[in-house]
Amino acid sequence: MLNDLLSRNRDWSHLRQRQEPDYFTRLAALQAPEFFWIGCSDSRVPANVVAGLDPGEVFVHRNVANVIHSADMNFLSSLEFAVDTLHVREIIVCGHYGCGGVRAATEDLPHGLADHWLEPIRRLARSYAVDLGRESDAEGRRDRLAELNVVEGVRRVCETPILQRAWERGADIRVHGLIYGLKDGLLRDLDCSMGPGHFGAGER
Image (cartoon, rainbow, N blue to C red; front, side, top):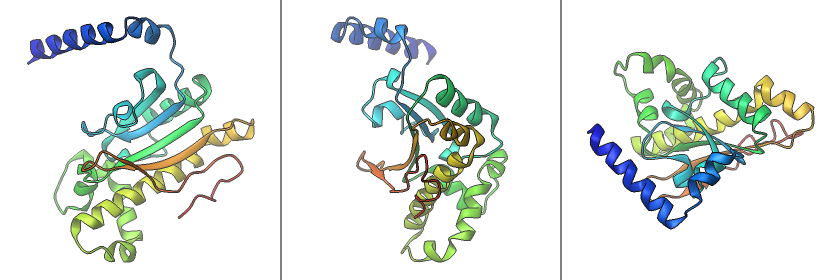
């Protein structure tokens, strides 16, 4: 399988160079992304592909179910690097319908360490039980919960001292919440964006 992977890589590299001879030279010269993407680790939702961007145009952090933990040093270091070093101006929290992590959070089954990681989603499910109960089936409830997880993620990103300090020094950074549809390949704006001077105004 590894040899197959390496062979596919060579084919891809040769194809890219035929299509765009300076592609790798350009990417190697500079990383200057406009977007910091916080997404799910699901292999069906690669950030630059679904957003139609080149790899150098988006800086990416991914985890199971795109959960924002305020004490996650991996996330915090990525956010700080994106804001303070790369000077991104758009931060996107992106979930997706049909999310396996959200599904696991709603199942009464043991998932090992994932149960600890997904606890914030279970907390959201309890807090929005009435809202979720309006959905007609389990899939609809999970998809609505995936949306709520994105909205909560946007709020948590905005609450970090990293972003608060950036706003205090005048950085024009906006945080957006999107959801991706596996069935149609479309990104949807959840209308929960926040920016400098508008913290709290993006709540649904």
